[in-house]
Amino acid sequence: MKLIEVDSAVMAYVEEGKDLVIRGDKTESAVMCLEDMTFDLKEAETSNTLLLLDKCLGVEDFEEDGPDLHHFQIQGVAHKYLELRPMRPKLQKLRLLLNQNPYAGDLYEDSPEHSGQKFTMEDLLGKVQASKREIIEQLKQIRACCIKGFWRLLDFDYEFEVLSQILSLMEENSWSMDWIPLEETLDTLEELKPRLIVQHVMDCFGEKTSNPESEDESKVTYKLNEDRICRLYAEMLLKHTDKFNLVEFLQAWQQSVPEGMNTSEDQLKGLALIDRASKPQVISLFKTSSLPENERDRFNFLFKTKERWTMDEISPYLEDLAEGKLKIGALLQKYARTSVGPGGVRVYNSKRPIT
Amino acid sequence: MQILLKPNLPGIGAEWVMIELQGQLESPENEQLSGNFMGDLHFNKKGAPILIIGHHILYGKVMTLEKPFLVLTKRSQGGDGNELESMETDQSEVQTDQKYSISAVVKKKLMFKTRPKPIITNVPKRL
Image (cartoon, rainbow over all chains, first blue to last red; front, top):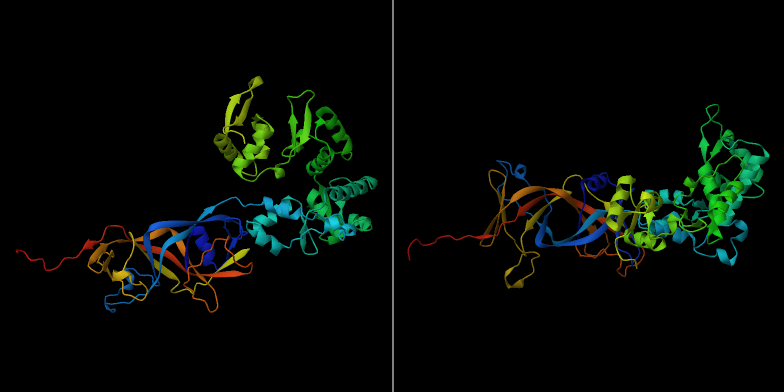
């Protein structure tokens, strides 16, 4: 028998008859998940003795005319119980797992590079320490796609190829980027790419637009998301170079994206880092997803990469650790020191020695 | 690995009560506690619990737990359900469906935080 100390929200959840799940590999510390929340599970000890009676008693259990003596069985004696603390789900493992075997088209499925392990939702639930809802949201975030029952990431070049094909189709037909007919796109590209993949890429880089005129499935249209597409182009350019001259990069980037789309430095948040101190200014790929998940390691990594950061520079790399702007401030207060740098801009540097 | 905790709370009787005592409960001659009689629990007119264990009396109070407890029992066929099984995931457990039942909830406790007082009867007034 075990005791778990819970809060009233978890209690209500259990009383609704819903299951709790404990997740983790043998080497990880256990977490407990609800449908949409994750808790750290720790054993707590008390020097007191906890006895459990299988009856709830109070004054109301002793009626005036009832029997005077009741017998109760003590069900257990405990000195330990499990404590819950809400925590951020550990989702980074999801990308690591899926990266073992990205999808690059049916053609390559049998090749040796694509013999890595594949994962179903059930596999992921057994390996990733997060609730199902959090896992599903993260899968969407990292643009994973469910192919034949397995969750897969698309190989970067393959994903880019699919997107380029959609975009060139758009240009050929002079469609507006707010009005891409889904059915026609799938039909036209069917020869080149599976419909499922094309639809997936459309979902990742665009949104279904509501069509008030008809509910007909064949008339569904998509509005492409300029920011997301420009980001992918930027990543494509930066992917193969260590550093890129900023001015040249911005030019090349704007020229590479489809006509009518506008690039802006805002789109690079959490994707690339601009070194304004060097001459000439350079830009390099630096993705949030490649950083450590743990707070302390994250800050260590960030300050190792760059000694001083402005608020604008560092916040995209902290957003996933914190909810809201307030929390970013709190994190910075904990791990960083501020000073006023050249030009009167407030900059942050590490409080702890960098390891 | 996943360990499922399935609620199994039949409406009545699913709420247990906890008695918290300071220190340890011991029986003379280090006998096993299990199966033995522990003591008498009384409630006074105000509803405050009084526990008498051997020659000691303890005064306590009924508290509603701010953080309630769930009682887990291992759902196993054949095994003793009261076995204290560690739930740490680093155990050498097979990666199959470990199942526990949430068989009761604890929302109230009888807290005895004072030291037990000895009960002395028949103290001769004069020796």
